Image (cartoon, rainbow, N blue to C red; front, side, top):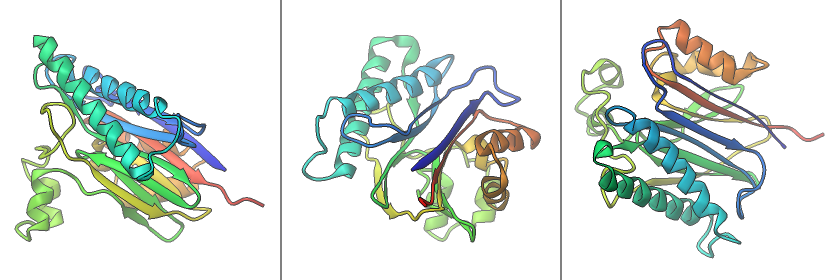
Length: 245
């Protein structure tokens, strides 16, 4: 059984909320559940539209399949991400005011002790237990590429002026390559999806603490990000894998 809480918030500094969230602990097409965070980018309302279109067409693609692809859940999520990318790209070509719009997208489904994740951009998936918090996805960002190459420390990356420069997003180009992950999940653990408006404001240790102690963790996380300044839109999905009696 899954206990799900989700919230998206404009934050304290932005004029509009360009994040979009989807959280359903019930079947979506052949999947038993589906959780998505998308953080849009683009002038005017482009980012808002990009994240909404991406999630809508991601879900539409999943729903159009009566069963999981023979190659597995991860390939179905990957094909859904590619379909979403094609639609956002198409809309940006049709509407001149949406040229270049794009969005991050981090989505997962949980079944039989496995969490399957598809990811592009710098929204994140974490696993949280009583003992710790682990980042499951790798940011598609300039600073993360520098960290992986040993040219910058994680501490330097957090303060670098180019920390918001992304190397891969969904929508601006006809082709994109999303990362896929399959991780084991145990009863009592938590999967967190979030936009950078959370983790740029709240430390991983505080995120873990709030998830493990709050009755309404999604609200608590958003409140914590706003208390630290709320400089960006904030979106979270908290999925607790309950221990069955």
